[in-house]
Length: 379
Figure 1 (cartoon, rainbow, N blue to C red):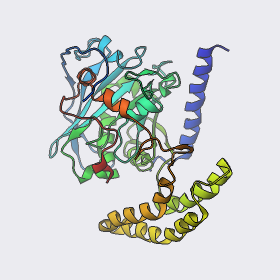
Figure 2 (figure 1 turned 135 degrees about the vertical axis):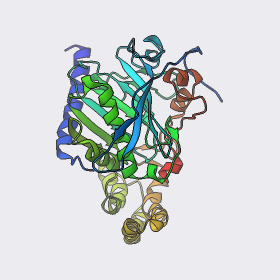
Figure 3 (figure 1 turned 90 degrees about the vertical axis):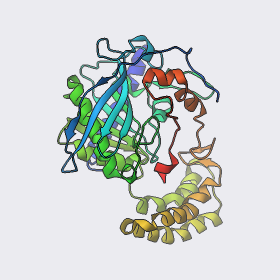
């Protein structure tokens, strides 16, 4: 079997496995590096002023603003060469902003890559990174994206196992204030209702402006706090789009259930998986003893949001800090935590995303500074 065939089969198997999982998931839940500096003129293609109502929610207005595209004659001034020199030159791609105007000015950045296999028939995926408040660029360049920015590299390399091997994929920085997205941030951008309205509106407009994709099987996938994002967005658009499934990886869904098993992960499971626990037995007992107070505060937070900050603090001290102090990676207990707070070093991605030429090619305003996570949104 050829190497290319093995890669294609691996990508197909990965997507097939996630599709099976999707069927089981409810659809209701400084120093710069980069390319040589050049000057690009942008002629944005704006569409809309489109009015949307999502599953009975308030009406709002949005429009898709394509700031970079590899397709000729679409109104973007970038041509084929400039966008493709950033990542995966073998596929058609598009980047831009979804502008929500009205009482507030919101600008949500997206980057779309067509499938490497058969974009005319392959499914379309929306990827949602969690946090909350973390940029999709971390997934694009460090997880399942078309390209990888390995540690120490200044420029991306092709990811032969990227999900766009078998599917077209949309990455979006949401909510407002995350990654390249910017605007008048409010409390609405810190809850699932706001995310559902804005991302749902983006999806409706995106498929309206790309009618050749509208009948493709559509999936919404996410990780971590995507356990809240994915069901909310899926519920908002499931009657309007050809949504076939939703899937969540390592999702935060119900803390009042999940947090109870942190001691078991750090002690019992680690002992089985690694041959030794990552915390001592006395610390394990302290975690177990601290769970009732953490659980009580989580329940209070559900009914009184003024107690949520205190609940977070108590649960972090009682349930999360003991594992963090072990120095191990909570996402992979076999590894040491490389760099706090995420345990992965995204410095090279940050340098790339804040490179002036990269931002110019993508149509990102000069004053927008990219970071892997927005702590204000996370709070």
